[in-house]
Image (cartoon, rainbow, N blue to C red; front, top):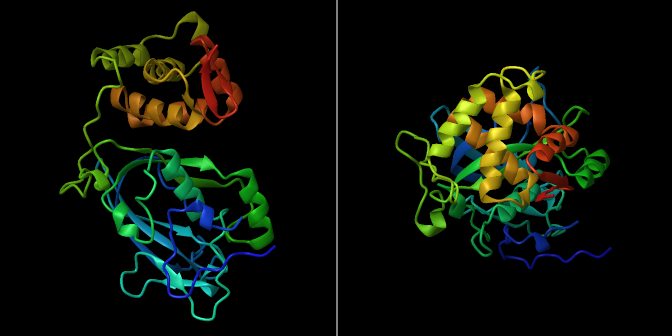
Length: 305
């Protein structure tokens, strides 16, 4: 199949997925994106040996909004992207064609393309991201690890693009762009002491709802949930209810993010992670919980019954 080549000398529009051809786990949580730089990067295995060849991609330096050390997360453009593209020599914030190279667009199944899709699904306005990654520096987001798309599994098996062991993989993606963390609207930026952003109450939900969540999450188990451990089911029901009060119909990923945030604020991050691990790793488990709340899971959509 013929592939359009980028005109020589013009930068690639990184925010336009129509222009694309068909490592370690980041802890889930809230982050500020401090720096995005295009570079060649070679991963390493736990024993220090190289994990496949060096690849061209974007290195994102993130800092937890709640405080903590910077974390570097690399998103590859694909194993052969360096044959067609190179970092912009003036800025390091975009890519330009390699003179005489094949000019093949970055593949839409790469980690980077999956990340861009998650940004768009989280509300990144069209036109914000083009050929300059610096527009995303200072953005506040919630990062979640989700299973890789089915189409990407076939891509990896053919190309070895991930260069990691053959095991179930996840990709760290954006599941929420925070309202007070959008540099293109004049908000966000890098906090001096990286404090957590103030979270607005969900829609019509009153602050008292948070207290109710804490009470429910720490209350003794009812007979119907006597088999649960440490109040995980109660915390999950309360957290999910908080999200569904505002958005009765929403994406599963949005429900996951909102539930994590609600339980973390009312109880603890440890409890929030238990809820995610228990109910959002299995559609059957989540569906059983949603049924108690008058909702159901249809594909990746949560709807009322």
